[in-house]
Image 1 (tube, rainbow, N blue to C red):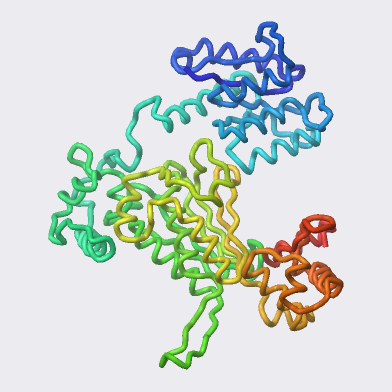
Image 2: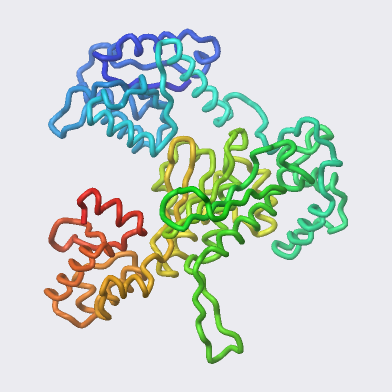
Length: 489
């Protein structure tokens, strides 16, 4: 049986804490899987309070944060017990549920407001108005968790029969394409002449004689008849913000494979191209500012890992300085955004949906996708992509090469300073020592050049002074505008 650690400012939310405790301990289903922990119910022990409650966070299965207006008493480090508990749960990779009381964020203590905002970018939080609403939101969150963890057995969407669908809703042409593509890409041995129904059985995409939902999404004649919002919306904007009228707006339907191909083509058609002459080849090479594989990886991940129970579509927006790929859904339980930037396993939301994408070489099933995006972006001389959780949406931002030759000319960047920019593009960062060595200049000149590039909005300084100071390339025109407005130039 797992423990749910209830964290909040005790003096402000005492009724809510007691209600949650009684609800977890008394609800018929929940009490079979969980017990609740309240610090005020801990018997007297020979241990410091701050050590005791953090130990309980470590031992718990779920961290339940209830955030109101007050921040709580601050310790010497300026942190309250509530924030320290949240930090410990995050550090330990605990499953976290955040319930926020009320909608008036302006009335909250500034540090509580900041804590809520920080929690908001890491996971989905729910707001409540009264005690009944509080327990309802908790119940929904715990049921969702138990389904994900297999505590409540139910078939995932990709393996479940698609209601009212029959084998006639499967496209024989798409099945034939898939079998040939899989043979070519992964040496898949299922004969190209295999009938659609037999193919679904082989892929475990059949449920009691009916095509599974995954089969309809992958091979359906008209998947949107069953999943109206299983589409990709692609938008193009001239500037860095969403503004009407929208110059170009397309909604791509059909099977997942078709949607991905069309969405990738849409994005690539909006990016800048550079022709690179070659003495060894009859034709010149053409390079796009963002590598094709980076765009495709982001879009494949969006359709493969999106929440198909959501009423939202995948949305791809091309701006003058970036490409944003949004999908409804969140990271696997216990994952943090930092994990995407280090080696990790693949944890697909829909395993049966991923397998055909793997067989056709649209996906790898190895957890390398985000790392490949980072590596390819660096090689192309553009900033690493950003990964964010924004409410119930997961967002990937791929930065364009906004610092073109024309922009550098307008900014008055000289040839020597371009060396510093080249180093940042290739290595991700630069410091004055490295720049002075590679450019063959003095440390004083190097420092002065880097300071000029910061003032011109090209580089962003990290650290105040000393050997630990380094510089990053600013991520697009939007970042320059925003930081300038905040006085961070």
